[in-house]
Length: 499
Image 1 (cartoon, rainbow, N blue to C red):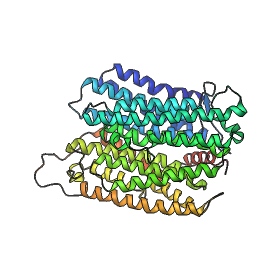
Image 2: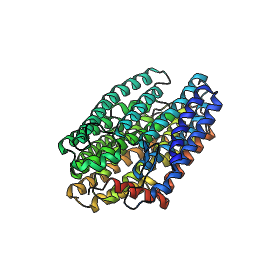
Image 3: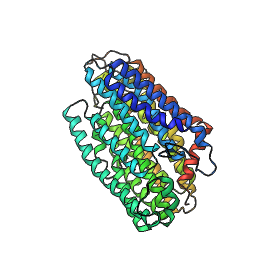
Image 4: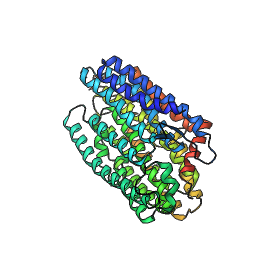
């Protein structure tokens, strides 16, 4: 299995080079092949990594410089799945845009492959410093992709994103230095920042120093996750970016950045106690969930609506990991996968609607299902998935989180039950907000006059990508594969060693 990690590292990078020099059709084909291969290879790792007894099984390569354990594989799967879907969608998306130049198409495909490569490398590298480098690369590449269309709004959103993210990554780099300093007391003045080495000695690290590093990491990487109050770049970037970029930003990049926080979480719970690590995530999670939910109802832009939904779901992730129950933690990790499928499907649908009706304004979008007989219903289904309705994977994951919050575990308290109750209330409000917008825009009748829009789909490939996303979302909700359950339990065990 070591060779699989090397191939996963090489495939998107090779596709980037080919896409840059090839014609648009070949670039699209290479991107689809690379996305499909990456997802297939990531799936091939599941049986080996999921065969755990104590949550410590892993696959390594290149002298353990690359290492995939249950926790990192969950996030790699989310990225690989969405990479595959986005590649398919992008071919149809670009083909349907007759105004797209050859240079634009080449840059878009090359950028998507490089972006996916950086997000795949983040959970694969076995070093806090290299993790920071991978997240930094995602920032640079995604900022260029946000601005790729060259409009005033896109350039402004990209600048806002790069400024806020750079500040956050500066804090994250400082967090890396602080943890390195904490480790120097027991590991010496010169050592590598591999997770295995840090976690093996974290219990003797100075607690106060580790707490500082953890707080810096949560705030720093939290800028990329979209945690309150460092979320302000996210709605603009997601709204102005091309739809394939928006899908990867929302469904994969935010989760990948949250993965970085979890690596610091593991160190902190060993050095400073699980209660401190959980309380910090709980505080940020509740505030983020509250902000995302409240802003949902007031949105007038379809893609900004989905952006605030992403903020809401990042709050749910933070809350899920903050609970003491293994059930809640496993539910949060399942939520990473379910959210990627739901948000990818929803952004694909939003992009198709915006391209068909030439607007993202929710006040002007009417009769979506009537005009787009396949995309319309699937977009509504994707929104129901984001609202955690059965039979979708988000229902199973959020139910597990809430049940775990009420059930408790070692170190649990009544505060967790209160947070679980708050989550239920806010998630219900988010459901009403999303449902109202979908009812007004997609379920309303087709206007009798005043529109020259012809009924029909823009691209079969765009529809196909949505169908695959919904299929994955239903599988996660109805009957996740047994190997995936083992993987999630192993990853939850990694985050609960100190409980």
